[in-house]
Image (cartoon, rainbow, N blue to C red; front, side, top):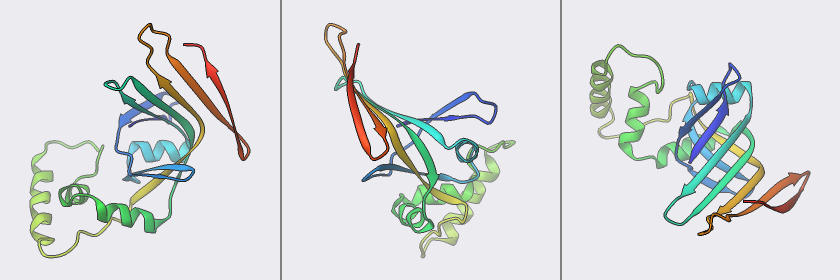
Length: 166
């Protein structure tokens, strides 16, 4: 999915990441809590996500509030990551400036050896983020460019829906 946040400078900031879980009432993704996206969400806990399936002519947009989930969920999702993803997380501070890749590659090699026979621990500053939708739009491509757009907006505990012009 593409996740858009509000930068600390008020500018939009977007990146592609993996949706880890769809829960009743929220979407869950994981990230290092030191990253730019985590910093932006702490400052302004509003985000938007877009899922696009061009082959199917479908798109879903979600807007809502984001918050760090409980530590147990972060640990569970970290444990489910492929091992090489876990090691990369320990070896690299994603998004931080570096001189070159060599030291990170060396650190990755050291960690691979260190954790050869045991589980890779979830870093203390790794987290799961819940995005709770306040608005969702389902878009279906129309062959004649008359796309079908269904909009759902939360009002308290209820959802109101409408159809939008293409």
